[in-house]
Length: 606
Ligand code: M6R
Image (spheres, rainbow, N blue to C red):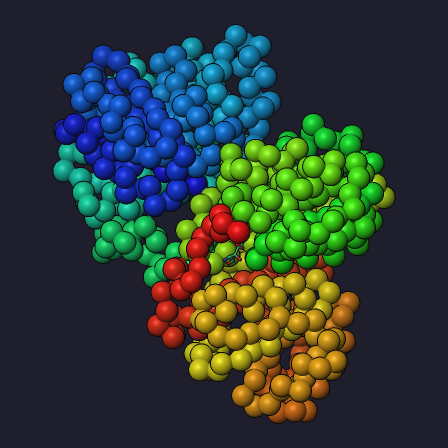
């Protein structure tokens, strides 16, 4: 999400830090900042917008020193602003943070009682104050360790102290952090792209580890037991471009592989397992109004529209609220019948899609309650909805949406349980869905390990010009999303269809040159999907089936297995092989998969 850079060594920190920030700009940013320790004090400056805006504000004579931190922010808590930009300061402590602190509100309350004053809305500033509080009675390193023991969540932190001009502490838990080892200097960063032009000798911290860096030395310890660790240094042979993609050939593949983390980030701190409930801070102001909602309309475009269709199945089945899904481009020109008991849920990764924004305005004019599911904090849709839930998926760089989609599905699952528990859903059911949702990141890791066999299947079908993508119930929208993905990336004709509709016409197209990708998990409609498969096979159609592991009731040309989960969650798992299929067919055809022809990442015109 955010980009972190830190420097300690013999050279002027500012130059390395600004260069590092520019290299991290590709991850998306809304503001940036830098702190330099000049030997006596820590000077900080921040700016909204591009790193070049920050650079212009810096007086080089004032910002000179051998220790420093810098940060490009991609907002999660609090809008983009100077106050919310990093580094954050509390007394002698200055830090930069990447990640999400789950229990920051609780800690903030505790610190306010102790007299701390906050200037930002961020979770990160709370960490700076907590370390400052601990530092009242303990020295710097111990204060950091003890503060971290009180924090729940994901973080990579780089921390400096006014009284320690030769010490940089970095810690990692669930957010990436790499230490670049130079000649009498260290550069730390959230990814290797900020480091690679200085050194290819690196050290990766693992979760729950802390490193203490001086200009010439480093020590790595465990956070919990303060035990010193031996860490193997690594040599990276990545180019600048490869470093940005963390060694993957394309951002799309990197983002497909990001999904165990992006789903974890979507649900982090939002599950109250003891009560089978969901905690959504953004919905607190409308909590009571949501109890009287008797109709939901979801509006969105493209991939976000297909997420909405899955949401319709989820909300109707588990929350019992009649739900419809509309293309935003249609909704904006219809005469929608809405009233104050209708909630319009607007889904948009970018938060800037022109059609979705226009549909939102129409819904507001008609007096409906509007709720956003948006990835980009502070975007137009996020600002204009009455309330919302952020995805926290981090910037999605590839034009084709991948991790934002599965993140949207995860948020819709949370919203379903939230609304369901306000109504008839039992605690047992709430717990059941939420505990299975928590298992998804590790199940996705398992599917990603099968990438090689999915690539082989993609190669086999790379020259076909037509595909059907078929699914039923929860997986009908996923069939549509799979078809959209292969259209976008491989420029091949593909149609997403409900499997049960084949016999009503489309089956006329089936022959040996028109393969079908069939989503057939062992769910409540498996037997029905099987019938569609038999009909296709009877017409010499080739079938690639994606089904639940150990399912032996299928005899088709090619099979991809995904782990077992609840029916409501199968769409998230089914999506992963479809993304990989599209990716590998696209690369097999030699396309620039990150920038497919005729497409833009954010469609801000009608
Ligand atoms: O940013 P949004 O979610 O509002 O974007 C909606 C669509 O433009 C987007 O999902 C588009 O379909 C992508 N190219 C899908 O990969």
